[in-house]
Structure formats: structure tokens, C-alpha cells
Image 1 (cartoon, rainbow, N blue to C red):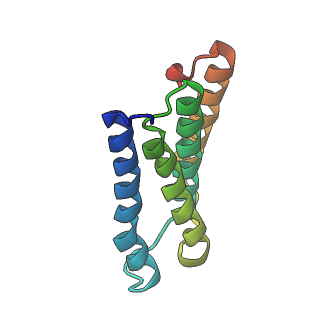
Image 2: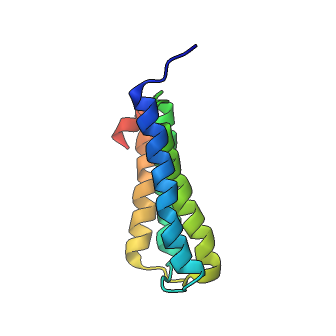
Amino acid sequence: MKSISYHEVFGYASGILMLLGMVPYVRSIVSTKETILNQSSWLIWMVIGFINFFAYRSSGEKETIWLVLVGAVNPSILFFLSLRYGTRVWLKSDTVCILLAIASLVVWKISSNPVLT
């Protein structure tokens, strides 16, 4: 039987806690309507989250990948919620953030090193 390292335990626990931490936030969006989401912001966070996830995965790290995966899934959930409950505002800073995310992918491709992104 394979023993589980404390890295794995904390990786799973971190992912679960991050997911659970979304519950009050989603509730404030859907039920109480206290929170208004900006679609462009959550789109950018979703893209950055998945870039981070794929960079992390390509580095070979597996024990704590759950934290990074949930770091990509949470903004995705919020982006899709923003389509119904959010506002559509696109600022110059949003364009800069998307361009920086794309630039990090180019650096990763050229260098073959996800750490540089």
C-alpha cells in the first residue's frame, strides 16, 4: 500500500478549502445579489489560472496540483456566473492583462520553461 506524503495531504486539503471558500461568495452572487461580477476580470483570472495550472502540471508536480487546479476552476465558475449575474465592462487594463498572459505563453513556448511564465 502506497503511503501518502504530507505534501499530498496538504495539497488535497488546500484544494478542498479553496472550493469551500467559494460557497459564501457564490451565495452572495446568486442568492443575496450583494456581489456584482465583472465579466472581463473573471475571464482574465480564468485564463491566468489555467496558464498557471498547465505550467505547474508540465513541471511534473503532482502532489499539490489540486490547489492550482482549484485556482483555475474557481475563477471559471465565477466567470460563468458573471455571464448571468455580472456586468460587461472592458478596460484598457483588461487588455494589458490579457496581452501579458499571452506574452507569458510565448515566453514559455520559446524557452520551454514554465517557471519563466
